[in-house]
Every structure is written in structure tokens, then in C-alpha cells.
Length: 141
Image 1 (tube, one colour):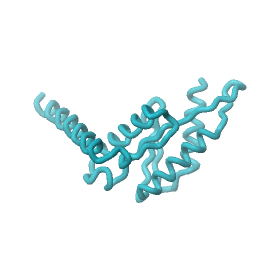
Image 2 (cartoon, rainbow, N blue to C red):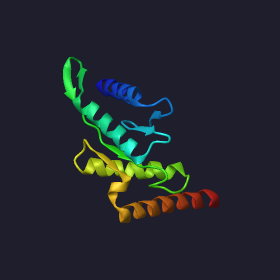
Image 3 (cartoon, rainbow, N blue to C red):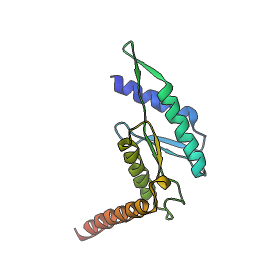
């Protein structure tokens, strides 16, 4: 179907723009995650904006029709956004930034650091509360 074609083309765009050390993975129905080892927050922002612009300028041909899509990107950076080595917190924070990007009108990049200190603190508390609850449930069953 057309959705599969577009997802494959997005994967091509991502893979053409990453370094050899970077990791690209499809993590959900229409979601990809990109890990940029040793990239600064600024480098991650530049990468995300480059991908967003390439996708928004691209015309996809699906069954002879030209379609235009946009993407929203959320990003989190270690150690700036999460001082601990739990990769789950980075994924959670990036996902929350993605939700903010979508709610803000789509076709944009939102970095966790742009959400403000109070929001970041609340998100970290929510993440650890969720994981502590899961840990408690797992150990008491």
C-alpha cells in the first residue's frame, strides 16, 4: 500500500543522512528512532531540521499521484536532558517532545530542552513513577 511505500522512502532519507556510527530503527507504525552517538545537542538539532526539510520538500509519487507529507520530530540529548544512563528516559522524553511537536501544529522539531525546566522535571518524575510502579508489580506477582 501507499503507506508502506512512504515509510520505505522515509527510511531511505534517514539512512542517507546518518553517519556510520548512527542507528536508525522503525519503532512503531509510523515512527522511527535515530540514535546519534557522540552528537551534541546542536548537531542533533541540525540533523533533525535537515530531515524535516528534506521530507517536506519531497514529492512522493503514489499510484501516479504526487503527495506531500510533513514530519514532526522530538529529540532528547544525553547527558543534558537525562543525567542517568537509563535509555528508557531518553526515549520517553523524546516521545513527549514529539507529542508537543504534533500538538503545536506538526512539521516541526521540538527538543526536550525547549520545553522548560518545570516541564522536564515533571516528565522525569512521571517516567520514574511509571517505571517504579511496573517494577513493584513485577516483583510482587
